[in-house]
Amino acid sequence: MNPLIRRAWPKAILFDLDDTLWPISPVIVQAEQTLHAWLQEHAPRVAERFSIENLRQARLALLAKQPEFSLNLGELRRAGLKSAFEETGEDLDKVELAMVKFFAARNAVVPYDDVVPGLLRLKARVAIGSISNGNADLAAIGLSHHFKVSVAAHELGYAKPDAAIFHEACRLLGVAPQDAVYVGDDVLLDVRGAQQAGLRAVWMNRSGSASHLEHGVVPDAICSSFDQLIDWLRREHGDT
Image (tube, rainbow, N blue to C red):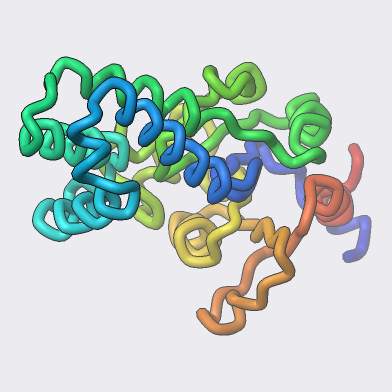
């Protein structure tokens, strides 16, 4: 791009969380195992009757009956546990203790190596926010101080790719959608969703996938790390 026609830096950069800032699949696997071990000790009748997979299938069945749970997977898990506790005659008061155990393990994520240094570099010049359909707790993870705004689907009642969740984050930051860039790993929920809401969108493609071609999505940029993201911002907007 001709440096004489570079556009101004965005006023805000918004991030997805799971699989953008940290890998989530191994964390969920470990959290499920931690929860089931807790159930074996504190609610043995549940653990005896329901394996991890049995509990997952029960949640999927519940989700099929009540799709509104898709906006709050934590509540879906809580409802599934309550059903299992009721079915086995375990003390329902222990469900909340089980949820505390699960969420502690679910938030034991390890950010990719480039994340914290990248956030520190970016927040020196733009406002940083997050938008997530999941239930990650940035305070528990230890990253909340990097974000001016954190918007979650389960708090708002609507989720990506709904334009409303992107617009709410922009509103809270006091920026227009066209002055914000969204960064996420999902080409449909994150990239297409953000673009349809009027933001520019960067696909954080750490795996080298080509799924954007399959879906016909054209990201404003494709990056595999924060270093590449920052390089793109500099090329597009300059350093001044």
